[in-house]
Length: 164
Image (cartoon, rainbow, N blue to C red; front, side, top):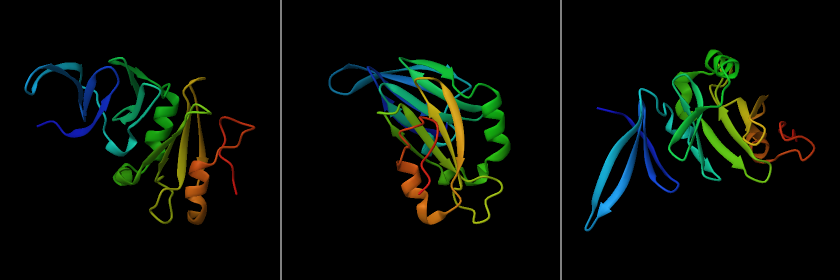
């Protein structure tokens, strides 16, 4: 049985599974749908990592980060970033991951628990600029300011999070 991760829509509806992506198409009344495999063997491993911005759906798979747009799946972690994330993230705490976007700055933020987290709570952030396709990371070591830092973007740099 395939593990369900989420449902997203653009011009079509896509069901994200742990190891696949299925397109759901309305056929007719009353409630008849067709299901077509679009991607097999690769899907979304952490449902908390899914976010859709400007018709692009970003998420974490078993081997790194991807974007789904118009039914096409593309890697965005550029190999080195994916390896770094997978080596440093505590995937046993992946259910604590959160994601947010700032469309004005074309940024997506994933906050997660690193293997070096002392508290077992999210302490790192991966930041992706989907316009320039660049990734960066930032520490979130003060739990009192994580929410502020997660939402506040420094206008001088599209790759850094403002530290209060």
